[in-house]
Every structure is written in structure tokens, then in C-alpha cells.
Image (cartoon, rainbow, N blue to C red):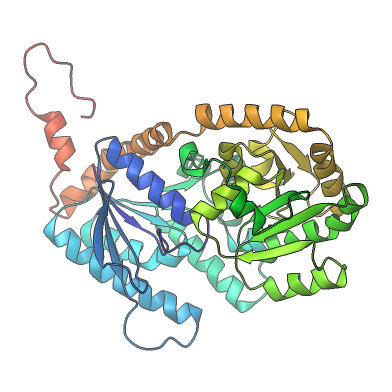
Length: 422
């Protein structure tokens, strides 16, 4: 099939976990025999177009003019994505457009109606969930755009049962419009042989490392980790917390660390490259993810793939991925005392840590491989594109059948099986 993918982030432009999900999904779909083109936001020093593992990537600058605020920037970006999508669709026919989150909703909706092709929407998180409600005009606006995207989509894809319940409730969606497909991972991308020189940059040889990586926003719960650290140090004084990532909550977290007397026991590493990330996973005694809200939690799969024992909060997608005492440990969300207890359980029991890490790596390899996940997406794409409703919609607009459908429906050779789609 020919798939047009829309996302406001795509590596090496990475804001959150969505960039890697869109990238790996696109690559996996290509490996399964599909054609995928991605339209995403431009960033300095990146090419406007390139091919990466068979995926064609197009990058666009938001429309002209300095935006008044982030929402104006998003609208300008959508205009540029829509323009590029129209240009591409006039040159080659796509079977569907797949939009990721509200930031590309308007471009996705426009392409759907201009070219009469089904719109698939992935909801990676909701504004309601991130903030435990919609409390101001900006949050309500984002919530309305999210609803609009799910309304326009032929199918909404969520990455966990937790997120399915959330979008069904928040957006009042019919259950049969929602599908659950988990995120996947390539374990080799997160594994590295330990390099002691890298370790020395972050901790002393005698110190145990507690590692967090993610956006520095309140819902990621880094403040809970900081509050737990004095309790952890009461039992394991030689401990260093390494916090990697950027975000608007940095100043608040830095002040909290100083107020808790953690100066010298916490490293705010900021943005780190993939090689450094892998080294920190390799050297960490435990990876900690204390989120208050987590639709899926790709970072847990990253740590599991790296062979690092994990403690995560018992919330959202984490609750579905982690089985307490089997492939990791879970702590009550927001509880510094419980988080400290679970971290200390791993720091004090190396055999437990090794056992959980081995089981976690095995599960990642068996349950979260991208080829298997790409085939789940393919099945949904084909169900939608070749549905009677989609075919009737194309006929009404004078649009031809997808090329794949035409090949499938061609006169079969003697002895060949019947077409899969009719």
C-alpha cells in the first residue's frame, strides 16, 4: 500500500517518544512491502527530503511570519504540511493518510477531503489525561482539536487499553471505531557494551546510578523521584540520580533538588544523544520512571531492551507493560515512599535485578517486535481502504481503486488462490 504519514516530530527532530514510534513504524511498514512517505516539520541543518531505510521523508518550514504563540505556529505548520501533502498526492496516489496527534489534525483532515482517502488517527496522549482535566482555554482548545481529529478519522488507534478507555470516554467515541496496537521497539538500538569513560562523566566509581530519561514536565513525575532520593540515600548513601531530558519543568525540579539537599547527588544531564543514552542504560543499576500520567510509556521498553532493571509507577500503560516481580517493579503513582522502597529492593538484591532484567528482555523480543506490530497496522489499513464504504466514497469522487486492490483483483493465474479483497 501507499501510506502518507503526518507527524510534527521525526528523528533527528525529537520532542517526545512519538518521533521514534512514527519512525520505526514507517520503517517496519516499508520492510513489509509498503511505500511510506512522511511529512514533518523542518529543523535547522536537516535536508528538505531524504530516504531513510526505504522511508521517504519530507520536511517543511511553517508558513511565513513569526507566530504569535505556539498555537499560531501549529496552524502555520499545518498549512505547510497540507501544501506538501497536496503536491505529493497530485504526483502519486496514496491509499490513506495517517495523522499522529492533534498537531497535524487540520492537515490530515484537509488531505482526507481533497483526495477522498481515508484518514487514520493515532492518539498518543490526550490533553485531558496530561492535566487530569481541562482547566483553561488553551487546554480546552487542544482538547477540541483532538476531538475533531478523532471525529474525522475513519479509525482511531491507541497504544494501550488505558488509552482506549480514555479516548472512548473523553471524546465519546463508539468502541468499534478504536483499535489497540502497542508501540514496538528494536532492542539492538538500545544495547551497548559498557564504557567506563562515559560512566565517569556522571558518577563516581563507587556510586550506584538511578537513571531517568524523558521530557521534564510535571506528569513525568521526576519530582517524585527527587523526593524519594533522600529516603533511598538513608539505606544506600553512595547513590547518584542521573536525569536526562529537557522541558519547562526544569527550573522547578532544580529548585526542588536544592531544597532537598541533593546538590552533588543529582545530575541534570539535559539532552543526551543516543550513544550516551545507551551507555547510561548499560551502567544504571535501575531505571526509574515515576510518571503520574503515561498513555503507553515507550521508555520502559527501552530500558527493558537495554537489559536495565526497571521501577515504574503503577499507572496507565506502565501498569499493562510491567508485571510486578516478574519483569520489573511497580510503585504507587505519586508516592515517594513506595518508589524509594521499590528502588531499594533492586539496589539491595542484585540477583532479583538480574532475574527481572532477563525476563523483561525476553518479553520485549517476543511481544514488541516492529514487524509483528506493522502487520497489525497493515490489517487495519486494508480493512479500511478496501471497505465498501471507502470504495463507494472513491467512486462518488471519481477516484480509482488503489493499485494494490487492482493487482489483487486482476484475473488470477490457473491454480492461484482467490483474491483476498473483493
